[in-house]
Image (cartoon, rainbow, N blue to C red; front, side):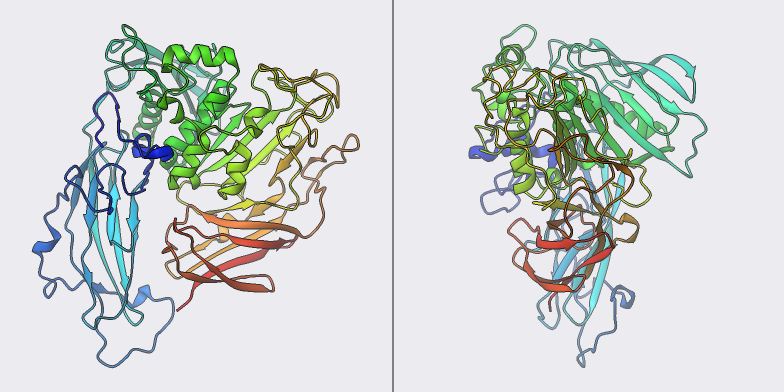
Length: 618
């Protein structure tokens, strides 16, 4: 599959729709650059540091580092370390494939494990094929990464490192500074984004968009601060709010593309429903790259995307499509399955995307993104919806996608995605009449909490199927309201308990479950992470059938949950391998699935910290 300057992509694999997933590393065999056997095809980018086959393994032995072993081993007499052939430095263009097969052999013909560490965000390592594949996106140009190959024969371990450089080959016009104003605690910068045919359809190229960046006062590169990408709602101006504790970026989507894009034939032609490049997302991501390139005080490990309504839908798709760049996504009142929009919104989007039965409508379907992309599955999602929302009704959480047959909630649970999901009887803006706003925690911050925090380069646990989860219902009604294609079963926001959706009026998934990010052990041989249930300050439920407020735990102990390590950096797994696990006084073995992911089922969490440990069996 190839992608031209306008983002067109035309190779499809049934419902997996890999064509749209090059940016986020879809790797299902028939993705671009691979044939049906998963081998590098003629369209793949050739390794640029010379053919590894030209090196003589007898001369390029690799370095054997005793320090890489976690504990001494009893070596067989005469055992020789594995040999890693030096791949040489690698160079790749933005939006092009680098496919590199690393040659490794063991002089004693012992079976080996071979891992790659320090991979660029979005890169993949196939241990069975010893193949690294990487397609950098357009804000990764000009950066370099040091990748280390580790080969272990059970007796000795060898390592070899090499560089990957990304050439900055996609160069849209730089944003222009139009105005700078000093506000209380931060600087507000108004930018002019001028488009080309990468940021815009060819017929629109050359127009400009307003955008805002706010820079906190008194920050230092020695203590970089988070970066928030703020996506506005339908018909709204770009976000202009600032903060003294983080960078904020406010792009503009004046055509209300739901933070996706539009047919490249516009404005002259008619949208076909076949090809919808993500122009709106690219403009947003360009601003993220602009901040990271110009401010050393911006922490690229703590970039997150936030939005409500149209912005909530955008937060999900931007945060999953470009998951490699975001620590987490924060989506409020968002519809993540485009074909499930109310009729009026479908009509509006058909003017941008083409007929709603076109395949382009499947690209932004978040249930498909989660199913098809490991990068997306390694993302953490905060999502909130209102049962009395009559604009983006609660079906956005519970009604299935016609493509995948999964709803948002069932995809999060069934695919073992890290998430905190919240629902109540609020509307499209108005808070729940009894619980109020922000009732589900005591201002817990996934960016700033001292213990349970997220970073794009740090593992975290995905809790699923927790015994403390509330009951959101199954998407059906309870008889209190009739069905409407526009508002679902929504009742009146000021009237408590009148929602027509079945299930609990308000509740959460994974509300009280915490991890200690400061104590994570993530090495080639071992993974460990402390977990517990949080019980803190808060208020009792305001009425029977409602949850507690704040951090007051309202369930039964222990809380039983499945746990999947996500965003693992060093403890990379091979499909089918067995792992030993322990947690508290429990232990057992578990098998890695075909995607290289592992879930430990039924862990019993208490108020005390207990450490989940995973180790390879030998």
